[in-house]
Image (cartoon, rainbow, N blue to C red; front, side):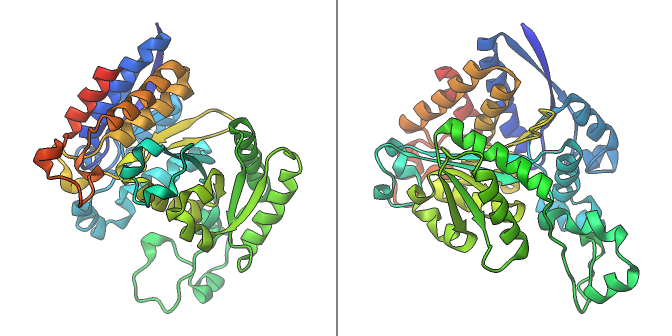
Length: 387
C-alpha cells in the first residue's frame, strides 16, 4: 500500500458529521488503488478557536501547506460569527482561513462540476424537460485568486494615506459602517489570466466540451481585458469552441442548464456567485463538490462548497454527498482514480434507488415516513454498501 498524508479540517457546524462519513468512504475506496490515506487533523474554524484562541492557528496553517493536500470540511457558524466575530471581525474564519490558504498555496483553479442525468431530473430545481436524454455537463472553473476578493489587501500598503481616505479604501476588518465612502479594488494580472485560461481550454479540449467564458465586458474594464485575453488564448486551441457569455445573461440561464453545457470559465467574484446558483438549480447546495488546484505545484484543497449547515449540527440530518463527491475528486488527485470512480458510481446508484436526505426531497413529494428520509450516517452506510 502507498501511504498518502492528507491534512484534515473537520470544520464547524455539521462539518464534523459529514466529514466523518466522507473520510471513511474515501479511505475504503482508495484501497482499490493500493492507496492508504493518513488523515492528519489541522484544526481551523470556530472549533479551533475554542482550543487555540484563533480560528486559523499558525501551526495548522503551516502543517497544511507543508502537506500540500487538504480535505476541508468548511468553516463558519453564525452563532459565533455574530458574537465573538462581532467583537473580533478578523477572526471570522471563512475569509481568515480560505483567502490565506488560497493565496499561500497558489490555488488558481476552482473546479465545481454539475453533472445532470436524465434519470435524476426530478431532483433538479428545473423543469425535467430542460434536461436532454444525454444529460448535461457544467464544469465550472472559477478563477480563485485576485479580483475584488484580494484587491484591497494586495495594494493597500502601496497607496498613500490621503488617497485611501479620499476614495474610502479599507480592509474589511476596518469598516465601521459610518464611512461616507468605501471602495474595493478589483484587478486581474495578464500572466495569471493567461495561465488560468490555458488550463481551462486544455481541460475543455480533454473533455471535448466548449469553453464558455463569463464576463461583463460591456461595462467593466477588467472584463474587457479578460475577453481580449480569452480570444488570444483561444487561438492556441482552435479545436475548442469559445463562447462569450455576459454574467447577467448567464445568471438567467442557470434554470436552462443545457445552454451552459461546457467548461465555464469565470472570475473570482462571478464564479463564486454563479456556481452557488448552479448548485441550487442542480438540486441542493449539499450536492456541491469542489477542488482548488495550483496547476504548477499540484498543491490542492478539496472543499465541497456546501457550507457547514450549523442549524443541523448534532442532528444527523445534513447531506454528506457534497463531501463524499469532493472526496472522490481528492482520490483522483492523489492517484486513486479507480476509487474515485467507484464513489461517483455508488452515489449515482444510491440516488437512482431513491435514497434521499431531507434537502433532496421536493415539497410536492411524499411525506418523510413514506419516502424514507436518510440521515447523514445512514446515507454514508448506503454508499459504503455499494462500494
